[in-house]
Length: 303
Image (cartoon, rainbow, N blue to C red; front, side):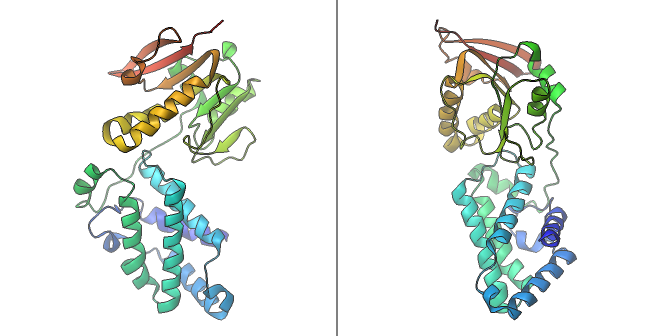
């Protein structure tokens, strides 16, 4: 399985700058030689074993979909793949495998069936206004999306670890959960989750924020640096279909603060913050640069 995973990685890395929204995406995708050799070997093995010809193993389907989605998020962090869309993607891999088995033509199946299917699947994730300008651009370059250091996040958000209220939840904590792990090294009860989490820890969960249940009156501190509220801004400006869902989740998050609890986040949300009841929430805003603010929302104790 390791060699298969490596070959999929190489194929995705080879095409990381290729635009699947391009009008003829199948013709600009390169087929990496090692990836092609792996498929040749899998096909030969499957034809020798009739039990394998009926269906590609689920763990390989799941792995392929997972790696593709990770690359997709690295290119455009504002995309969201819900469970139904994951299922559709897995079906594309199953169907492509069956086509290869039926025809014996790997490259032909990839170009005539698999990549056009992937292209249509990706297009369904984008707001309509992005599709027209991108369909004439074969290459989109690469995007750097790195996790901030724990100290940078503490400094930019103005967090004082010595007086932080517990428990702490970091929404969109990054692949490595750096801030969560740092806070825990100080003896602070901290947790986090991220859809791209690479670590396996009891206090870190691989989860989308729409799938995480925020229970009322729970958290002493909630943190989200260039994560949830950044995506909320994108939905507000470009994806109104998701904006209502973000509003509902925002309400769930702030009501999960315990009395006196604080929500540290960047960027700020002026279009929401002006609607907050000052009898229940106190807001502090600090300018970072231009019109980008760090906001600290404190739930006022009811006692």
